[in-house]
Image (cartoon, rainbow, N blue to C red; front, top):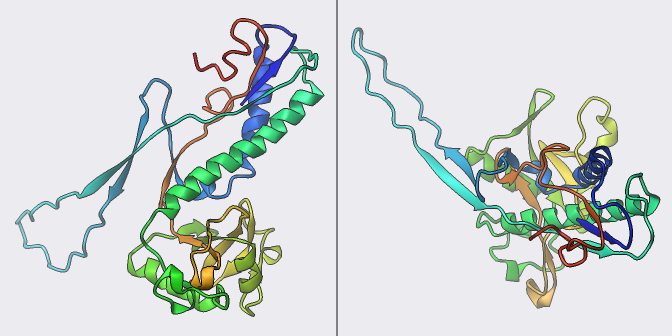
Length: 288
C-alpha cells in the first residue's frame, strides 16, 4: 500500500511506521476469509521467491505380528513437494493534502483503513481462485455437471452430507476445535439463505461464548462449520438456461497453503507513506 503526499518528512519515525503497518495488518486479518483456512508457511526475507509445502502419505495399518528377535523391514516415507512462487501486489493513492508525517494523521488513518479492506479483498480473491481451480467437485441436486445445475438446485443438508462423505472417504483431516473435529465450508449469501432453514442448523449465537469464532462464521450443521463470504466464486451463465452458478467450498485441515502474513515489523504487508522528491511520486511502492 502506498500513499503519496505533497509535503512532509522524508521518512516516518519507526514508531509511527509500525503503527501504520500494524493497523494495516490487523485490519486486513480480521477481514480475511479464504486465507484464514489455509496451512500457513513462513518465507523469511532473503530466502528466494518459492515457498515449499510437503504432503505426507499416511502409513497403512500394521496387521502382521513381530517375530521375536527379528528386525522388520523399514517403511518407505512417501511425501510430495508442492511449491508456489510468491508474487507482490499493491496499490497507492495520491493526495495533495498537507499531512504531518511525524504524527498519526486522521486522513492517513482512513486511507490505511480503506487499503486494508482492498488488501484483504485482493488476497482472498487470489486464494479463492487458486482453490477453485481444483478438480474435486460435487454438484447440487445430484447433478453431474455445472451446465445441468438449474435455478431450483439449492444447497441442502444432503449436499453437505455428500461432501463430508467424500472428504472422510479420502481421509481428509478435520479441524480440531474444542476437542471435536469439524470440516469447514465457505458459502455465499444464496447458499446461506438455503442452508439456515434446515431444522438441524446451529447458529453461532448458541456456542460463540465457548468457542473461538472465525471471520465470517455463522453456524454449524452436520459436523461442518459454516463461514459466509460475499466473495465466493460465481460462474456466470454456466448453468442450465444460462443461469449463474455459485460455488461453496467444503474442506479439511491443510487442504491448501498460504504464506504467513507475519507480525508487525516482520511482515510482507506494509504501509508506504512518502512525500514528493527522491522518486516519491515516480516510485510510490518502493519497487526500484
